[in-house]
Image (cartoon, rainbow, N blue to C red):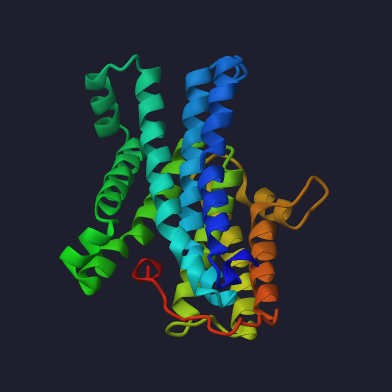
Amino acid sequence: MPWRDRNGAFAPLKALTFIALFVPAILLAEAAWQGALGPKPWQEATRDSGTWTIRLLLLSLAVTPARQILRQARIGELRRMIGLAGFAYALLHLGIYAGDLKFDWAKVVSEIVLRFYLTIGFVALFGLGALAATSTDGMLRRLGGRAWRRLHWLIHPIALLAVVHFTLQSKADVTEPMLMAGLYVWLMGYRMIAPEGGAPRLPALLGLAVGSAVATVGIEFAWYGLATGIDPWRVLEANLDITFGFRPAVWVGIAGLGAAALRTVPIRRPRGTTRRVAATSSA
């Protein structure tokens, strides 16, 4: 693994991560240039940029589990980069939405105020802005480690608001929002069962995988039962039928089992490897 080398070989992983974070935006720009965004290109681009915002937020939250399960402290150095990319995609999401409204900012503001799902989305964006503005080493020193960690703990409720926003704006087809919700449950559950500074033991991770999958089924059942006219019992039956592919709960369970499997992999540390954990990996 490149981050295990003592001679700076972690740098290529950081460089590859940096480049990869631009790929969704490049692909979106290419699709727009070629007119491949369908009959409503602005709306499609808005959805795509918003989806990547959620994915990156959850990926930033997954840095701590990855660092602890793989026992590689330097993975924590990727958190800031991924988090800032999530904020950048959130800004892009808002900008494209404004473009769909012909950049009529009075209308944009009124829509945000009057539509609940847009209101909570804007609150999440505002929170991400505050975290991005205080993500520098200088702000860490100015605020102090304890205050800085308390502030950046807000990424957890901010991510929840983003998932709710994603679900509400998706209307009837909430397949991916349910997947994101289930992964969020796993990430929060991980933080509840993880011992201080380390990864949970294998039985706890197996239980978390099953529990988060079951919770995903419950969230999906509740959504269809309360927010749509679709019979939630049919959705529940669909979770048990893989004829037409896996439902979100199954994918959440697979992801949780994958994390548990990684916990069993023995990882040797090269001589001289330090075990210092950067302050940015504490969230």
